[in-house]
Length: 210
Ligand SMILES: [Zn+2]
Image 1 (cartoon, rainbow, N blue to C red):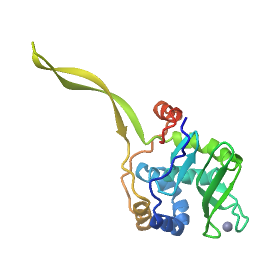
Image 2 (image 1 turned 90 degrees about the vertical axis):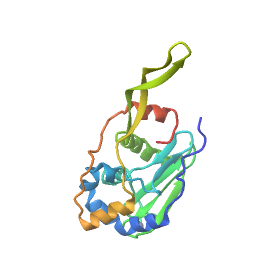
Image 3 (image 1 turned 60 degrees about the vertical axis):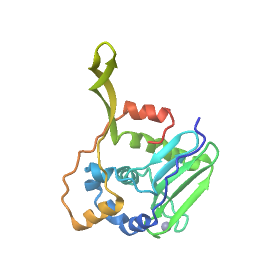
Image 4 (image 1 turned 90 degrees about the horizontal axis):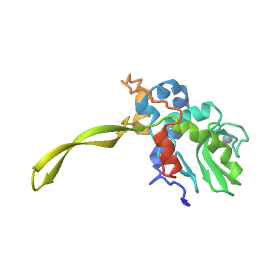
């Protein structure tokens, strides 16, 4: 079993600042983000799920927006006490848990921590949501590969190979915000929705980060 939780390679402070300044803009443009693969699958460095034993990964921007709108990622703020904190990352283990996010009233980031109940109810609703929006798939393709033998020399044989297909070339958060501010009409890829993606489920069962 994987005992280490997922950790992003580096949290980009500039990106965090942009997010603070643009949280309202993002929510006001939720439909644009939810309908555009390049926006939806933007993966802010600070937004992730990190769980011991269960693996983890980044939360795409589209899932952040849906999670807030559906109250999965909306939580009380320890500063003002109002339920207007946007949970941006969460994690824990079997006996500890934490949630971290931005209060839209106070414009401050805060972390709440305690027992596993701190994150498990969110995790339970959030993971199926992330898994329903795959950013990659796997297809079987036939490829010719050379085979050598002393009697026949080089001959080409068809072989079936499983190839990974990445659906999107997602934008950075900075690029998304720039386009939303300027009202750019982007030609977007459709957002793939697949309830129970078998490949992702398999990856999940293997405790890999997604
Ligand atoms: Zn607050």
